[in-house]
Amino acid sequence: MNLVDSYGREIDYLRISITDHCNLKCYYCTPFSGRSHLERSEILTYEEMLNVARAAAAVGITKIRITGGEPLVRKGVVEFCRMLSDLDGLKSLALTTNGIYLEEMAEPLFKAGVRRINISLDTLRPERFEKITGYNWLPRVLAGIKRAEDIGMHPIKINAVVMRGINDDEIEELAALTLTRPYHVRFIELMPTSGSAHGDYETLFMPVEEFMKKIHQIERVQIEPTTDSCGPARLCRLPGAVGKIGFIAPISWHFCGSCNRLRLTADGKIKTCLFSQKEIDIKNALRTGATLNEIIDIFRQAVAEKPSGHHLNAKDHQNACSRAMRAIGG
Image (cartoon, rainbow, N blue to C red; front, side, top):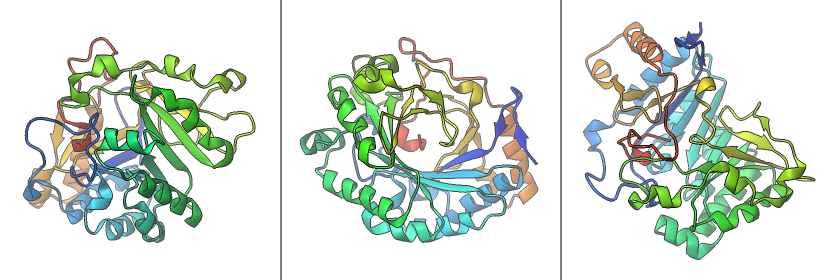
């Protein structure tokens, strides 16, 4: 049984945000005004999230990614991953993390069924890491990446959001990680969300074509649409490299035509598009005793209402998502 939207896209990927809390304060992600966090009662329980995932898997979702906020700050995440990995029909269970707790949690997560992992890392310089995140914890992140590699997680994807004047001078240095390590280093255009980037989006935004030029060897390789990343990255390999580099450009390269995902927010809303203001409530159904078939019907409704695309560009982003990125799950 497959989920196909009104534009012919097969929807087989669900991102589940299990918390809006985070132990970093990255200024392109964390809002600097307004209410800081959801109340505990607003956040779905693991059992409620599992019921959604069970319904999703029953109608064709084969890939699930756990996100946040920072998912590893929520107690019980390992057991939740174990329950998800037991779902019939699930082929891929992945997790996105900032890596702060990854060194100690990589092995339990691996044993629970997590094989694919993304780590957010915008800089390799300790002082800059502290400036971007608010904490001097770069060594912990690097140790977590190494531990994930040692226990066999693959692929290990390192996500770097490129910001003009902040870290764009490190692009080639980050790309060089792939020369000796089997990582996917992906450079991501800064995305407009409400209350983030200190309201300075236009200044910080750098288009993908511009930051690609900062990798001087890029002219010697061919960029192809990805076939193994379950996502929107365009991948390539530098000459002689063990790993790969990738580019994700939601503003410059609209990949909406191949979008295969839905998002479940921590407070029980289904988002059919990262930048859409429209959200479909599923929490009320979960908390009023909805059957599996009724939850499936809400999923089908979400797929039917999935828009053709986000219609954003670098100059016109007034309709960007009103939630901070850490409240969505990215």
